[in-house]
Length: 147
Image (cartoon, rainbow, N blue to C red):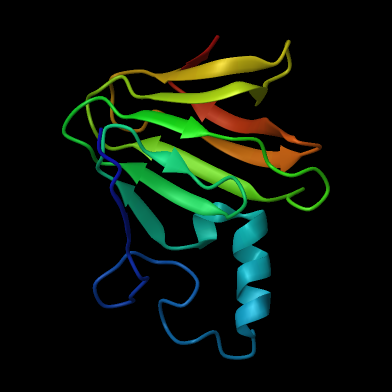
């Protein structure tokens, strides 16, 4: 069992792009920057997942890229109702493995709540989630099967 998460600080010269890549935010305070990232996780820095059993913090936004050398069985707990509402998490694969995200009866994708998100074994498979009322609303997904 391994869990490896590596945050990458945005940098305009070396990448990746994101809030804070050019400066400390200028007219935006750190709180304002965090408010933007909370609602749109893709605005934040990349967090690389290179383990095989990663657990994602359900109370913090995240722009996750799976870069593991094997299948990553990721777990995601429930967000806290009202407190975490509108928080977003994005998880995308940059590998050729069929990764999974388990969130027991927490994926709201327009049908009955689902537990498992299985990524196709292709780069670019992934999903973006938004917390609302203690579940994860699926905002977008590509190459993902929910069961």
